[in-house]
Image: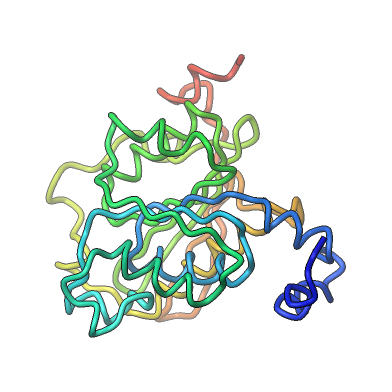
Amino acid sequence: MLTDDQRERYARHLALDEVGESGQEKLLSSKVLVIGTGGLGSAVSYYLCAAGVGTLGIVDNDVVDLTNLQRQILHSTPDLGREKVVSAKEKLNRLNPDVNVIAYKMFVDESNIDDLIKDYDFIVEATDNFDAKFLINDACVRGKKPYCHGGILRFRGQLMTYVPGVSPCYRCMFREAPPKGTVPTGRQAGIIGAMSGVIGTLQATETIKYLLGIGDLLTGRLLTYDALTMRFHIVNLPDNRKNCPVCSKYLDE
C-alpha cells in the first residue's frame, strides 16, 4: 500500500487509468538494471528513478570527464574525475528516496554479465560500443531477460525492445559487429547532446510499459529518429530467430 507521501509524489501516475495505485506498487516492486551511465543511461536512470522503480542498478566503469557534460545530465562540473556510478547514485538518491540505487563500478564482460543480470526484471542497454551491445544482447537471450537497446550518433538515434519468446533480438538484425574502424565513434563523429535525452527517455518509457504490461512495445520493430528532419520511422524486423546464432539455441526451451 502506498504512503500518503507516495500518493502525492506519484499523483500524475495515479491519475492514469493505465497505472493507478496498483501499477505504481508494481513499479515500486520492480528491479531494472541500466548498463551505462553516460548519455543514454543518464536520461534512462533519471526518469526510471523519478517514476519510482523500486530497485535500480546502474553499471559503468568510467569516470566523469569534461566532454561528458554536454549530454550526460546525471553529472556536473564538480563531478569531474569521479566515478560515474558514484556521481549518478548521489543524484538519484537525492531525487527519490523510495528507490534503492545499486552502483556497480565494473567493466561488463563474458565473465560477469550473466550473474549481473540474473536478479533483474528488465535490462536497459545504454552503452556506446558494439562489443557491449552484442554482449548484453546475447546474455539477455541466454538468460531470458527482456531488454531495450538504444544507440545514438550525430543527429540520429534508434531503439528496439527484446522480449524472450516474442521478438527477434539485436543479433537477429545485425549478425556481428562491423569491422573495427568502419563505423565512427561518438568521439570521432560527434553527437548532438539532446539526442541522449530523446532516445534515453524513450527507453525509459519502453521499460515502464513493459513493467506495467501496457501499450505496444517495440518488439520486432526498430524505431529510428533523425533530429535534422524531425522524423521518426519504424522498421518492421523480419523474424530471423531460427537462423540467429543466439536465438536458435533457445527457441524450444
